[in-house]
Length: 247
Ligand code: 13P
Image (cartoon, rainbow, N blue to C red):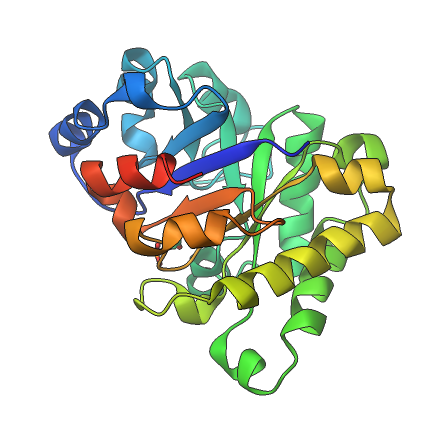
């Protein structure tokens, strides 16, 4: 069974005190035991947040594909682990679009994370022009094939993928539950084709893109949606709390 996960990607928002306030407002004791809640703060604040949290995992929005050395501005997995982060994002569409992270580069991050035994959420999703041309399934399958599907079955087991259609991110336009389920079902079937049904059923496939309290229940009720990667709505404690409790 795939693990249920709700993760808040705070992107480059909120100072340290605001982050602490937000976490206080989350009513941590109400997080259901079968839901893994994660927050992805700005890296600078990981240490403070990780120290103060028990029921929520703290993750990093980005990490280097190198161990150490002359890589100005980068942060290594061992440095990240040392301040308490347990998971990282790979391939968010904003990193693909603004920092030119392509499928081959993202593959190197996947390999590095596997070597360093660092858990990750691999993000995929098509831009609007691709959806409008009807090529979204081909596009997403290609992202997975070029960056992720070279892993062994053992490495793929219990993996986490986030499907985030770019046209739904930060736009207020959510994919309908049918659109989300169609893509999630396809992703699971590609994993089954490449690996086994056991591997496919063990992978958590999260939806991201204008997910909010008003649509989370319907999205999370889809058979192949195992949770969400939440941007804007995770910056508001009561909205994020409601989404975490939407299964
Ligand atoms: P929004 O929820 O703000 O659309 O952002 C989604 C996202 O990019 C999460 O990684």
